[in-house]
Length: 493
Image 1 (tube, one colour):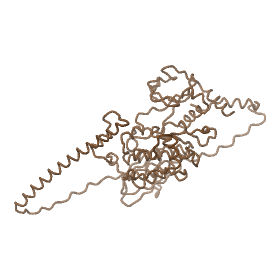
Image 2: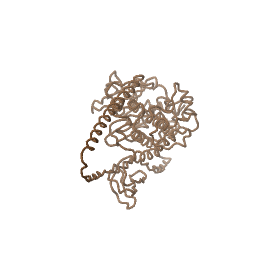
Image 3: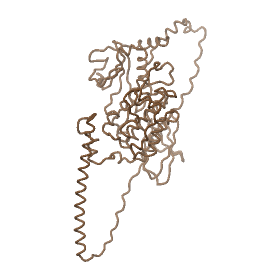
Image 4: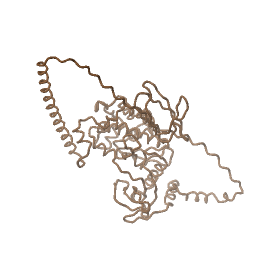
């Protein structure tokens, strides 16, 4: 009880920001972006810098709830404490005069992973899935190192934004740590009997199964997302939350390759490992990012640009030339794609028949003419294809060192021509404050590696010198010291 009262005192001690109909403090509201059970998200402009931001406002009735208020500020503290390009930036947070809490965040332009799925009813191209899931895993590995578990990963909470610095020209951004659990904070707990998360993407342990909430909880949810990206639908489908919970705890996911036979065996096995009922069987996010980086290096970039449909059908599914179609209208898209494929086949048949007639005429002319002297045809020399290595690190700026000679080569991001076929080259990535990471590149083949570096443990703090009995700071009675400490702010902006 005392902890709860202390938290409220510290939260209320923050400087309150006035709110008018069209403003929140120094921010001018532009439009409502979305609304959920906990609050609203607005697009806003900071007047002085003309900077566009997103502001999440927790509803007053929610902010009056101690647990909700703690969870909201936990999100702000958790996201602002960890820096990674795959996480949304938080600039400011506080409390409004009407009692509602707010948080100012980076404004993102792009589409959610849910919207991307709507363009690919049968599943995304495999190289695209590998790239997107690897980016999410790399961002999660950083939050997990900080002992932060998201607990509500789903396609709606992952945004795709343009970024020319990464492969594919777009980057995944993880949003909404609203129910994030700080694993090293015993005072942040879920209410007794309350299930936190979205049923379709919840882990067995969130549903009440064996095992505690941990970093592997996010890996399971990401496994559900990967399965959906590959096949167009999640492994478990239900109409009610309790049906989802039962399937997560006891049902076996349908074999991925039965739904999509062209999925590589290694990728299918990895996704099913992510969906293991026992948390200890699942890989960590860091291990997952490493395996996907190797799988991605063998995938063809051309395959990602050309999904496994013919040209006419691809135009219907991916170009987005018409209004967004939902529900039964998605069947119309599939029917349209089928009719265009049939038309394409008819065109091909006409071409084959015409070609056969031409060949028949040429064959008849050849029988009538006397045989001509054969000419030697020199085959054209093959055009050499440039094969490159690409190495990135998270965070970037790490030194690339040759493991054999210990000589520095460059800094990440680093791109170079691949070595001779059959020859492997070992490299070490070095960055102050992080553990060295060793990678191996195979010569003669395209390699694209993104390595997440693990931060070195912080050195133990030196013991504070004890004050002497005569020190004036220790003359306050114990109850006044407790009251003074309770007024300190919980977070600093």
